[in-house]
Length: 130
Ligand code: HEM
Image (cartoon, rainbow, N blue to C red):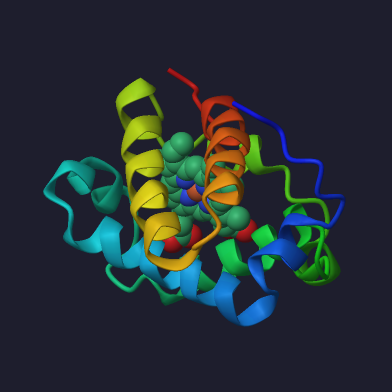
């Protein structure tokens, strides 16, 4: 993968808050509707709006925008927070599948899409605990 020379943050390149909200919204839409994501959908509460808010806040900081999650909840300790869920390669790949669809829906800039997919794969793989 070619790493872009663009020195702006992911958050800026994405276009800021509104597109990021849209990305997270599409992500949970796909988790909710893709049969292939059924296992990870089942790990979540019926109502996904809580998870959606938190992922939005987390990604805002992770992408170099406002650190909303940390301001509100402190250090994310994301791997520890995922320990109650059994996350294996299949769960990781389901998460990435939803994210790939969401990026395709929302981010027009193809190099940015690829960089985000690559970087998020690292985070998703780090969540693996099986
Ligand atoms: C690898 C597969 C993953 C699975 C199966 C998974 C699953 C889950 C589940 C079941 C929850 C609880 C949702 C709730 O409270 O209703 C959760 C919370 C969360 N996940 Fe994941 N997740 C994965 C990867 C990721 C990744 C890659 C990120 C970040 C880029 C992430 C960010 C978060 C955040 C910010 C929360 C909220 C934590 C909190 O309670 O404060 N997750 N995840």
